[in-house]
Length: 206
Image (cartoon, rainbow, N blue to C red; front, side, top):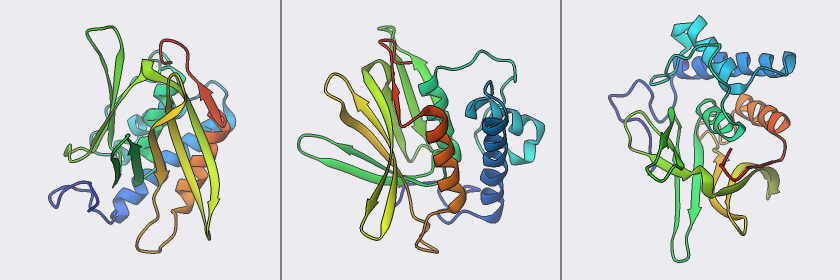
């Protein structure tokens, strides 16, 4: 069963036209910014677009000042997950494997008592939540891999010290058309170009 907004949510399992328009508008703003300005980031461009056009702001997306301090690269990449649409999340333990599909609607960060930072990826109704301890991450790898008759587009968060996958995020296929959203692929490719195929984090997880 796919996780996601419940029946009362403005977003359903099959995104409505308004939801698709929201992502399309924000993605377009991000892609233009990435293509025309080295100083712009996916986070800043998307949030500034939402400020200029409130009707394009996704539910739960907070307003942000265009002049706020730049976020560390890994936080900008995590925040960009809000604009990728439905994704398949996979985490592998020694005994169990957890796999589910969700559309990230909110990304937040919390300073823990031990001085570390916890990132939370969630849906607005909290039916899905994933947490990452940023200081425990070694690198983030973006991979495009052929598998059968389909290509997999993944973002892999690898943990210290052995680069084992802590969390894998895959673009999910639109069940209506049994194929990817072309705009999601384009956005993923732009993120890969901007952040590189491998983003190495420092000791502070940034």
